[in-house]
Image (tube, rainbow, N blue to C red; front, side, top):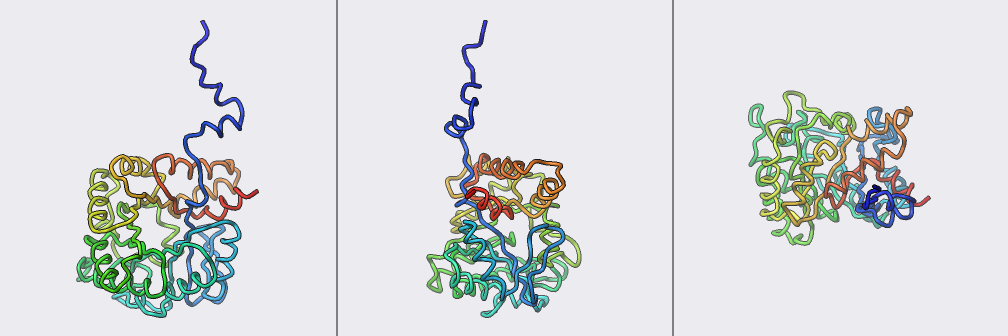
Amino acid sequence: MFPVSRPRRLRSSEKIRDLVSETSLDTKKLIMPVFVDETARKPVPIPSMPGIARQTPDSLAGHLGELDEAGVSSILLFGIPGRKDDKGTSAHQENGVVQESIRIARKETSQIVIADLCMCEYTSHGHCGVLHGEEVDNDSTLESYGKIALSYAKAGVHMVAPSGMMDGQVGFIRETLDGSGYQNVPIMAYSAKYASAMYGPFRNAADSTPSFGDRRAYQMDPRNSREAMLEIAHDLNEGADIIMVKPALPYLDIINKARESFDAPIAAYSVSGEYTMLKMAVDNGYLAPSAIEESITSIFRAGADMVITYFAEYLCEKSRK
């Protein structure tokens, strides 16, 4: 006897498959990371991230124009400063690399400008805050984060994205911004940021590898999921507008669990290691290019509302063809 239910009927053509698809890859929901190197004289290709380069303050406007033309509607800025010290003071300078990049971006494009807020690129030791001995001092670091957030807001940023995983960082930044008249600047919190091996290419790109130890004392243990829900709840209670899970592909279960537990918008960061693995596999013919769309679609299917990905420009250009 033939089966009564035939799910294949709804897979019989591309148009029918599109009609009944449960998840769509909306390019307006993609965010492109952008590196800006304060001392570079020309764009510097990043060997560990094929196709991605550090921009210079002079090349940034042109690069953002290219992204705009491709259809990228949101960017996430990272800075590589010309000067580092043990307290990362260049991170909150009025004319710092990210602050100036924000001004350029606001002047040259209509993109949503989000700025990563951390100190690892700015400290001489590569850790994400102020040290007390060989440990990051949580509360002293919050003071620095508040200064950075305020400097970003004064430069015109649309949104700040604190990524240091300090306890209380969202509340401190929210209070700082509100107390200075910037209550309308949203916070995209790196709420569940795991101590992952997937960050290797980024650390080469941003010169942010710790000079000693690692970040396991403040980033999350990859073995834990309930703890991620606790971190997210804390950030939402402290005033986060968007919460984030990072990395994305190895933590689809965390994205899904967050979606089931919270009503807030969820961002997922498909990090440098994810990009490099896929990019090199596709470039070498080991995987079909459709693997890129499949991987990013899986992040949306898990429950993300927006995805930060180094494939944003590629996917936006592809959608326009």
